Image 1 (cartoon, rainbow, N blue to C red):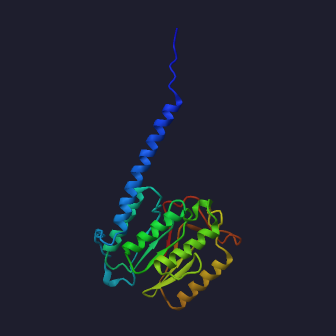
Image 2: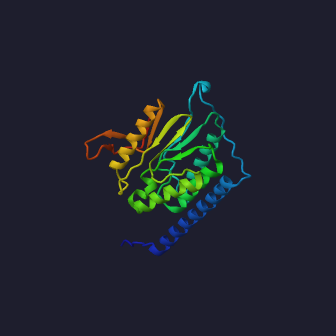
Image 3: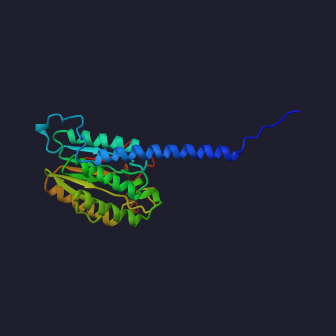
Amino acid sequence: MYLLKITPVKKDAKNMSMAKIGIFVKDLIETVVILLTMLSPFSDKSGVPYEAENADELVMSMSVVSDVHIEKLNPTSYQYFFDILKNLKAGKDNDAVAYLGDNVMNGQLIENILFYNAVKAVNPSDRQYVIVGNHDHGLGERSYKASCNDFIANNRLYLGNDIDKTYYYKIVNGCYIIALASEDETAQGFQMSDAQIEWMKGVLEEAKAANAPIIVLNHRKTKASNRKRPLSLSDNHSADNDICC
């Protein structure tokens, strides 16, 4: 005769729940410690110094950061981003810093607060420009209009960038920096409205008339398409975001 021993499910479930609670508390403590360090005016914000090659010959020098995916209760993402910001601040000849989208993981309020507060606290450059990505819109889980409004408000509040749309341009040392944005409300693809296309054409004409260098920043790689979708994107955007000069 064979006897089958059955382990009570409730006991295993309880052990699993306790383990999850332990991980949660650990991540919470680590996150709080990192954030306090990151935001404290007394914390060491020195990083690894670097400088551009042939700096005397440069018209403008800009550092670009992409896909940091700040996520709530993920201390690794905060520490990683904090180290990046410190190293950027230690850099010489850094006229501007651009954050090329997917700056947060889920587009949540707390994630955006943490991202923008970190950028403001470390302040690696007097000119900081944020580009919106699909994760910043919450991958379609959030209201598209609400996430756009938050993006504009955060840029104004934390970075002093007086913008009224998710796409905009700035001039740094005579260089035109054009930030594009998807207007696909599902946040799953990329779509530029006719209004944004015409706006971009106008800015390009203005830069051309001034004989100025042009840098176009976009979260996803663009490719030519038909007139109804003047700019569309490849499905895989993780490896080659757009920086067009």
